[in-house]
Length: 426
View 1: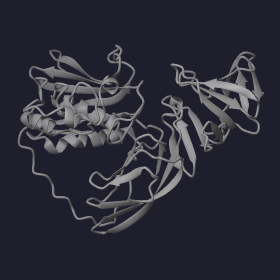
View 2: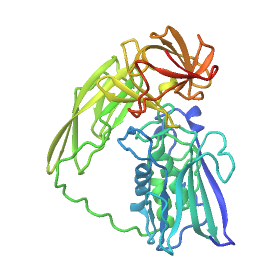
View 3: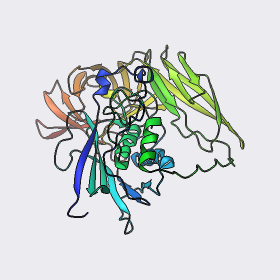
View 4: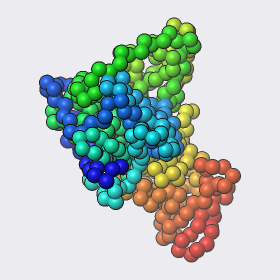
């Protein structure tokens, strides 16, 4: 980076979640003519802009079937590339290896700060742009590590921010687009919304910056039947809106779905399942995919329960009535199942627990432990496997099972008592 370069920051905000009605953008916000806004600088013609993707693994399968944050970022980059002319392209190699001489590069990573400063209230991500004169020279995208992300299409979901649309927005900044007015149908609005990809205004903006994109490559005729790539297990809550996006290999393909839980229906125009389930239970649905090379049939498992405390917002349904929960700090809560009254939980290691929401700011839960006739407390802040034991008036550490990653000790269960400095069983 040249000593005479300068930099600027852009942030995308979460505030829209609290103040905007979801699903109404098309009706409320008519598209203004040429509403796109430029930051000022742009990349030189015939540039490859390399963004090293070092986001890592989420430790679970995301809602759209992805198992890597970096794969989500690659998909977000590729949304823009077909519309870029002037020989400019975005490239997203996974990892931090150096780029060839003459290639502009930066990084996309999770971070708890921006150059040593806080992200700011409700900020999701920041793009830092370095310029030399009126040309871009380097750019970095920093995603807030304090936000709970997933990857999915459609309306925003409670406590699960779609990283893909966040990165599509940030890569718009990377290319030279600035924020547009909040009334514009655009991925470049200042606050996140139900829009999950670029819009006509965004395309017009990048093509004004980088004209004459190459003609699209014709879609090849598939040589193998399609295979479902989105998650095979879907969880949802009764009387609560659910949306599941179907994705598959070997396009183009058509899709039909049967055997859905009551209250859900398949939308063939967008290849997604949506609705509000009306009954609790475990359901098996059949997805039939067809292309020019053949047909495949896949079974989807749906687990529908009563709404659970926010502590379980990131639980993953893995089928046959079993759930798995882990946290951004990587420690798993573990495997468990619910009874029809989902206050009753069978934890595969702790045993039977009666769970209820503490309704505090730390997203905590109380557990009545039937094995020890004891009340426990834990929370997102306390960080399971740390538990507060009310009968001992002490914080405990529940020991993992060293022989079974992702599991904890059982029969007997071992705990470290911080008050006495002793290892105990309960």
